[in-house]
Length: 286
Image 1 (cartoon, rainbow, N blue to C red):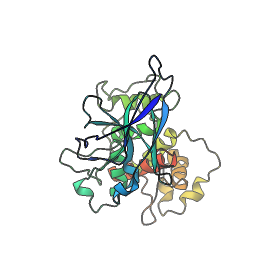
Image 2: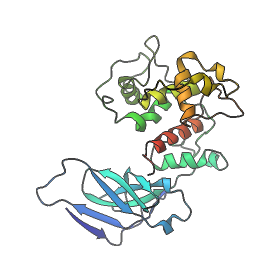
Image 3: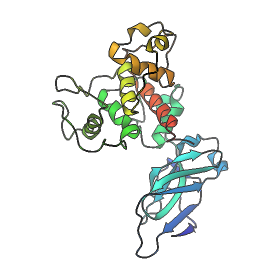
Image 4: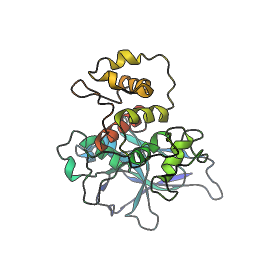
């Protein structure tokens, strides 16, 4: 393998992107090939951050034909070392870039920083008009699609669907996500239906997260953990263990002494909870 520094790389065509490191090209010796993905670590220039959130950094691959085009390949940020690492499976030119996406209706919203961090990694997107609708309800289909980064690589998750739902068309934009989630036992329907357009409640969100994380625990005291909330008794029996786990792990938080377990989760709440999970898994920062 040989590595060289690319000189005079043009600015990215996508105005949301900025280069924060040199561009490094690596290639394999003639006739050789990778047997598995390799871990690539690239140092970035912290001075170029200009106060931006380091969670928005990522490793990108430069298009060989058009050097102004870049593709995100992943990235775990190490602030102490001033570097970003990602698993890559093909030779090429790579660099650390920051992706800065703004949403018009998040300027003064409590979730802005977390939503923008997820948007930089392509995990969440806004509407064509540049809004995110943070207080809008998130549907069951949307939340399952959002959860994919948490469980898609779990053993058995991609071995084909174990069942289908009458209300999930094969060509639906969320069809593959629901199929994977069904196989991984993340979601269950009722009466052969998934109800993709129904809002997901906060306790349903906790249950899906619990399953997606593959949690197995019998050392929790749900009654004690939930009793600190004024409406802890309103958590459904089928969700008490999972909600208790989410509370203890800091994934689900109350407001004004209430958990609001049966309330519809908002897009901002779902995004923030997902980021907490990814951070806990070490998929955002070291």
